[in-house]
Length: 193
Length: 186
Image (cartoon, rainbow over all chains, first blue to last red; front, side, top):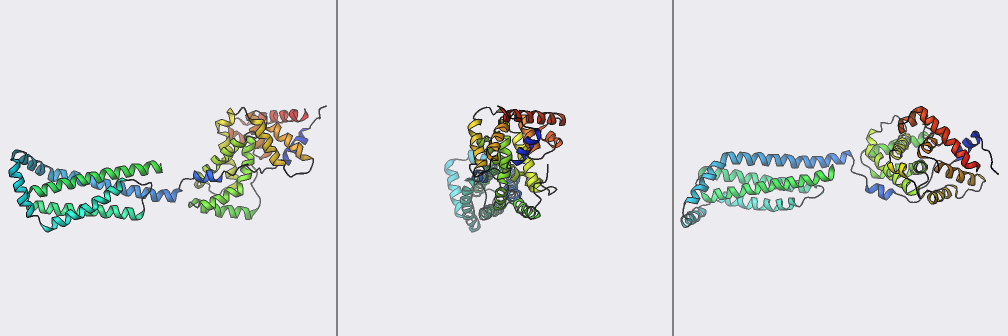
């Protein structure tokens, strides 16, 4: 036997239904794990990424300028080197290396230290601490100081193969720095987009 | 939709928590979650036809979406009202809601028993039957009945949320009530 239910009766029953229902499991842990940093935190991350981009851009400009200013002189020097005998070149390098100014020796030590920091930068982290950023900035400043000292020494001794070789090495390290910054930036971009 | 709550104290507490959430305070957001979870789950569980697993997924999605979009909440309505609307939209846009075909009976029984557990009056059985009948409705009819009869949305609001015409919303409600009554009368 069926019972007739009026619309009013149906609406009364619906009105009696509880609006609150407890889920069988509390999903807060899963929700919390999916919460991205909010805008304020993203701004900080974007700031770090912006710094990396600015530094990379600066390095690129320096590399281009260095290539334009020093490139022809260095390539000329290299061509000369290829035409000279190996023994004569080694002898001349040895003599000139002994006259290496003390300032260049100090600069060499500086950018060796900076280079070690660049290796650390290459292991890109999800986020950069203020200390890491300061370390990178210090390393970059050391490289630029070294570059200035080498450029000054080359202005006085443009034919010095030792100085020219050091400048080439410096350029290689600057390019390595650039590549690692680009890698770091890509890692941060993947994590923040 | 009718106002979420008339209690000004609740509204003020929500407002303070929302402000803290905007600045990235997860603890504040968790408090908002605790305060509104069961209300939102009730909506989603019914829209999901009593499917606990789907409702829980939708609950997660709704609160993650709320966290992401909290800056778009400008305080023109109560937070609970905004969250309720957002959650309904999350559910209505979920393809699983439309594709769901199986495993409804067991999930519904569990949920319905959980709702009426502890009650001693004769309405408990009626409520379980009613939940069962609502869960068994076709998806669009169920959505309109849940949103209009249980949650208090207007046909214009439902039309806006579901993309159907206002006339269709009214027709779906008529159909839903008829089907539910037929189910209860058996």
